[in-house]
Each structure stands twice: as structure tokens, then as C-alpha cells.
Image (tube, rainbow, N blue to C red; front, side):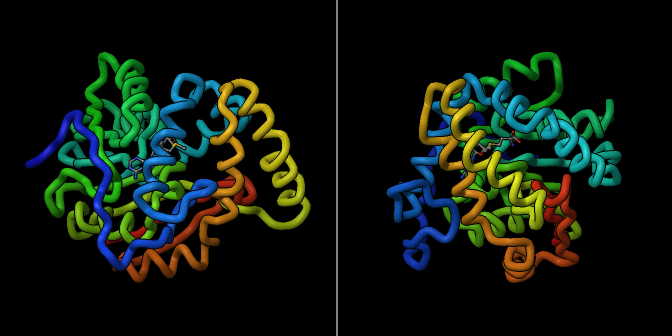
Length: 263
Ligand SMILES: C[S@@+](CC[C@H](N)C(=O)[O-])C[C@H]1O[C@@H](n2cnc3c(N)ncnc32)[C@H](O)[C@@H]1O
């Protein structure tokens, strides 16, 4: 691996054509730099309770989703020379699932996030493992072109201030034939969808706010899912970024789902 930045996080200066937010937009924010900063502050504020709330609010189904995602890339992870990057890794649970799937082979697995507090917890949890952590912005990664065989992002891509830029950056750091996997929330239809929306919009923000002691993030969560493009749109965006064989697999009635694509 030719480059790896440890510590020192910066937010990207986005080019002129991306002055409006075409990605996440926390309340009251209309400009990409401010959106990225608001997202980073939000996750930093909930870092101490993030794992507890994640497992509680998802009834532990999140563990199944990470595991299933890692299993989907079993063939890449079985290769001892594989280089894998887990973007927006937060406290590292997707990264751990990738490591477990790879077993004891010598695949290099890195987790990257721009929230120092989230990464600190990932580091604490990973003592004694070969995992490495990088403090970096997913829209401007400190890696050379074509370094990775697999780039994943679990529940983080939706939070990027610019989805096109996020996909382009994934594409840039992937090797030819490399794969990307984006696990994120969706919006199920029918009766399940109705029940889910009631839970997601009413119960979850209430419990999340109560336990974390911070109001914003758990109101932002359902709003960000509503704003995230539906699978048909997202697949078009992936193809536009140059991904081949773009696909979406729903998990648990489409509450979450895995986007895949190949360079
Ligand atoms: C919902 S958490 C997901 C964490 C983890 N992947 C998981 O599945 O639990 C989203 C993470 O994305 C990170 N994030 C959001 N935008 C980012 C960006 N532009 N660059 C790097 N990390 C980002 C946040 O700091 C946060 O830790």
C-alpha cells in the first residue's frame, strides 16, 4: 500500500460545480462544507453511546446486516493479498465483520472515518487485531489511485455531502475489477413500511435522544433516509460514476440493502 494517513483530518474544498448539497443536508444547512461539518459534529456528539443505541434501536439486526454484507464479498476477502477499505467506519463494526469473514489470512483491512471520537472507539475495540484506522474524509481520500480490491461503506454513504463525488472517490481508489459495497437504509413499502416509518420517525428519535442526551442526530436519521435516493436512482448514479454490474439486494423487507458495483 503506497499511502496511508494516520491522524490529521481535513474537510475537502469542493469544486465550484458542487456548491449545492446533492447529498446529506442536516437541518438548516444548504452548502456542502457546512453539511459535512454538521454531520461530523453530530456523530462526534453521539460517539460515546453510538454502539449501545445502534444495537438497541435495530434490535441487533444491524449485526446480521454487517455479517451478510461481509459474506457477499467472501471471494475478495479470501485472498491473502487483498486490500480492503471500509469507509465511514464509525466505531468499526462493519470493519470487524470484514476481518472475521477474511479469517486469519493476511488481507489488509483499513477503516476510515472523519470523526476522531468514533475512530477512537474503533481503535479501543480492535486492540490485538491487525485492523488499521485512518482519519480521513470519504470525499477526499489520502490514497493513491487503484489501491483497493474492495471498498465498503455501511450506513455512512447516505451522510456524504455529495453522492456523485463519494462514488467517484470510491472508483478512483479501486483497482480495475475492484468492487464496492454500500450498505444503507431503505424505505420498505406496504404495511411493513407503514409500521417501520412509525417506529423510525416517532419511537427511534425519542429513545435515541433520551439515551444519547443529544437531540439532533436521531431526528436527522429518518430525515436523511427519506432524502436518500431510492434504489432505481441510486443505481443510475452508480452507473453514471462508471460502476459495472450495479445491483441492489434488499435486507429485511428493504429496511436496509446492499448496493454493489464493479470498476
Ligand atoms: C451511521 S455511522 C456508520 C458507522 C459504521 N459504518 C456502522 O455501520 O455502524 C456513519 C459514519 O460516517 C461517518 N462519515 C460521514 N460522512 C463522512 C465523510 N465525509 N468522511 C468520512 N466519514 C464520514 C461519520 O463520522 C460516522 O462515523
